[in-house]
Image (cartoon, rainbow, N blue to C red):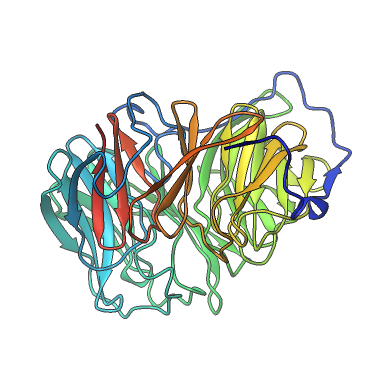
Length: 431
């Protein structure tokens, strides 16, 4: 199926606004900070080694189904939307049982899918959670020595690779609107989490990854959000290299210094509910917010309020509500999950390249973050349908894979194999 004519739905609403900004210095750079891991052999965190769904390596099949290219399929107890992560010969994910009263980290054998161990977090009263979100939506992360998982009221914990709890931090009774979903982030020796809540101060905090000691905590005025923090490396206008922790959040995108948690800059323009994590490329950070809200292209590396000086372009409508965007080459791909419509922008300038519907129109019908490999981009809806499209300036839907089970979690890709979590199962997909 090929089409070069964008559908008309939403086009009028995509009001691109070019703003007057300072010219970008020729030497400025901005990139997502990669995980400290072999990108070809691990998938150690939310959205993989790159932090934005880019897959290193080749040999991944692009077709599958219940009886096609399935290497193994195993049952997963409980419920959860967290993505699987992979290190060495093990897969880790989280789950919740007994209406959230029991929350656990699970380990599986990479080759066979055999469950190796289950470790429950210390007990706590479950917080209120939106049914689709549940109590195990935060994707764990690993450095190959420990697995780190965040469970809201059940706390933040580190386990060794055999499932023994090394340390645990409790935050008491949280009052997060719809529950917890932001995933922890490792940056050097620091483990960073973001927790938005209503009746107590929201915060971003860093912990020593070895001991769990709280290194710093910064209160946030935002209340509603589930976006995961992103680590980026930038060159500032005066030529200084620095790291930034960026949080896509309610009404603002805010960057923090990882060493002490102080706020570096903020850009205003996001909406009330913010779920997608940002992506970085072409010296820009791309923020999206729902429901079908604005997209912001921000030049990071600034100081203070940069709303008027470093937002390079905006699109007023059509952003994803849940689904993180995908940046591949010169193009930014986004699914408006309120209508199942994908829009592709020229990333540097913000011009709409094409727009098409993926499958039937569904409200909140996409959740999993897309991935890109082999010149193709894979978008999976909640019904377990994966739309395989060709990268580039023209829309070409190659085919649709149907796994036959509800799919909310994002996949992990390692060593030529897809690891896909559906409701009740973990699948290994490969030739």
